[in-house]
Length: 134
Image: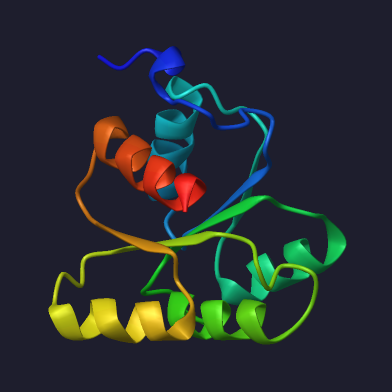
């Protein structure tokens, strides 16, 4: 078990947006963040929903699934990086696509880090730490 105090130098008040078309997956990711001590969490069910929420509210961190209807995670990343107030907001992509090709595509589009499903709080913490410390 991970205790919340193991995440170092991270502002636990930062607002996190979780983007995934599966409500169950959003709940799992939310629970992992809560275990790490984060409680300001918003949810969006696809890229279109996420963009409207990002336009309405400042978020400090975005965690997005890759495969979603309407607007997928890669399209969302490209949109966020090209317009609006979240161009520099850290983004972690969550996906079942573990191939090197997808990683390169995601990084070129502006993703800060990448998590392959399934994952746990330890993996999420490592990726968060890696992005925040850069």
